[in-house]
Amino acid sequence: MRITKFGHACVRLEHGGTTVVIDPGMFTDPAALAGADAVLITHEHVDHFEESRLRAALEADPALRVWTNDAVAAQLDGVARRVTVVGEGDAFELGGMGVSVHGEWHAVIHPDIPRVKNIGFLFDGRLFHPGDALTVPPHAVETLLLPIAAPWSKVSELIDYVREAGPARAVPVHDAVLSPAGFAVHTRLVGPEGPGAVAELRALGDGESLDLG
Image (cartoon, helix red, strand yellow):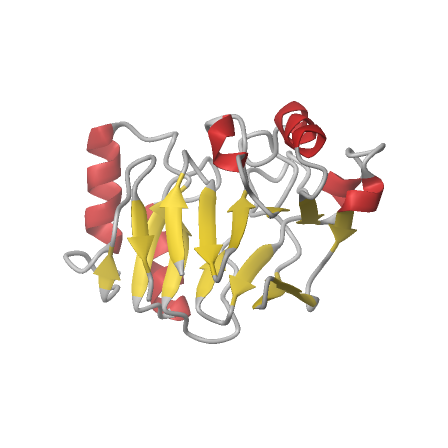
């Protein structure tokens, strides 16, 4: 299993000849979608879901399919037959890789801002992408894609989330809102040098890959 970071919260996952792209939003190079078999979208915010780019990718590749929640699916009229709606507790397979769905709601940004639906995806029980929520996977995973900074989070919450989730490794995502200095501060605090004490924190630059074995 190999993951490649493609800007902000987008990750491209390759496993057993299957390529899955998660959350290709406005900060993502559209090239991330080239050759993908499936696109998984956690929620409707534009930094995770850019409708025009996804429609262009679907038009370019008739075999491409999408898995997402009902709120995103409702915006993809005209291509509904290529979109599968999933939610908490659902499970499906992509090229022999098991995917389960966890979580229901986006983290609270502010009480006056309505919450949107948000789902996380767990791949083969090993790799978890929570989207914009601190959803704890059903068991400790090998790799957690950790939303390192957002308008809805603070570092103390991230530290507690890493402690509760208990991954062997955390890979920061959702970092477009940080300067390089801010990224260094956040990763130090949630990594082995900080109170978060995750076993390993592996930062990837855009286009960089990590083999998970």
